[in-house]
Amino acid sequence: MSAPNSTAATASPKSFLEVDDLSIAELGSVLELAHRVKAEPALLADALAGKQVAVIFEKHSTRTRVSLEVGINSMGGAPIILPASQTQLGRGEPVADTARVLERYVDAIIARVNSHEQLAEMASVARIPVMNALSDLAHPMQALADIQTLQEREAKSVAYVGDGNNVATSLMIASAMTGLDFRIASPPGFEVPEDALERAKSYASESGGSVAQMSDPFEAAAGVDAIYTDVWVSMGDEASLQLKRGALEAYRVSGELMSAASPSAIALHCLPAHRGEEIDAEVIDGPSSAVFDQAENRLHAQKALIAALLGGAK
Ligand code: CP
Ligand code: NVA
Image (cartoon, rainbow, N blue to C red; front, side, top):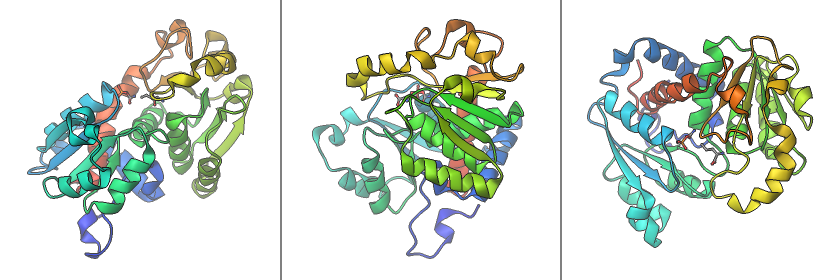
C-alpha cells in the first residue's frame, strides 16, 4: 500500500473508520503483513521511527489500549494515551478543534468514541490519518484481528450470533471483503444496519464470499467453521439491558449451538465476555475457544494497519 502522503498534496490522508476504508486489495495486504509480523516481530521494528500517535479513549478499554500502546512502541513510535475525560474534550472542546490542534503535534490520531460522527468529523478536518478504535457503529481494528484468527485456523465460514452491533458490523464487512461465507443471526429489531449489510453483500460478490442474514441461530450455525458472539449490551447502550436480555436469550452460544457447527469449529468473542449471558463458560473456556489467540492478534493486526497507513510497511 502506498503511504498516505504519497498521493496529491490536496488529497485527504488515508483514514480507517470502517474496514472498507481499505480496498479489498489493501485489506489483503494488511492481513498478509499481520501474519508476517506475528511470525517475525522484528519485521516492523523501525516502521514508526520518529512518529507520534495520539490515542484517545472516551470509553473503557483493556485490549485495544494495551495492544495499541505496545504495538506503537514496538515499531519505534511514541503513543500518547489520552483518556478523553482528562483532556479538554471532556469539558466540551469541539472535536474538530481538538483534531486541528493534534495534527500540529502528531502523525496520526486513533480514537475510541461514543459517537461515530465524532470520528468522521476528526477525519474530515485532520490532515493526518484518523483510525477508529471502536465507535457505536464499528470496531474495525477488532475485525482485522478476527479475520487474522479465522485465516490462521483455516476457517472458510463464520456465523455471528447475537446483537447486530459495532463488532458484528465490522466483522461482516471484513468477512465479505476477504471471501468468507458469513452468516448473521440476530433477533428482529437488533440486526446490523441495512446499509452495511448491502455493502457487505456487494463485497462478497466481488471476493467470492457470501453474506446471509437470518433470525434462527441454529440455521446460522449449521456446519460453519467458526461461531462468533459479543456482549448483549454494548458500552453506552446500558439502558437497553432488559429489552436485550429478553430478545437475546435464545442467541447464547452454548455447547448445543457449537455442536450444530462443523466438528472442528472454533468459538470467537472479541472480549470482554459475560459467561452465562451471550456465551456459556463451557464454550469460552473449552477446547474450541480461540478467544485468546484472537485477543493476541489485536497486537499484530494493528501493527500491520498502522505501519501501512503511516507508510512504514515493508
Ligand atoms: N475487544 C476490545 O476492544 O476490548 P477492549 O474494550 O478491552 O479494548
Ligand atoms: N460491542 C462491545 C464491544 C466491546 C469491545 C461494545 O461496544 O461495548
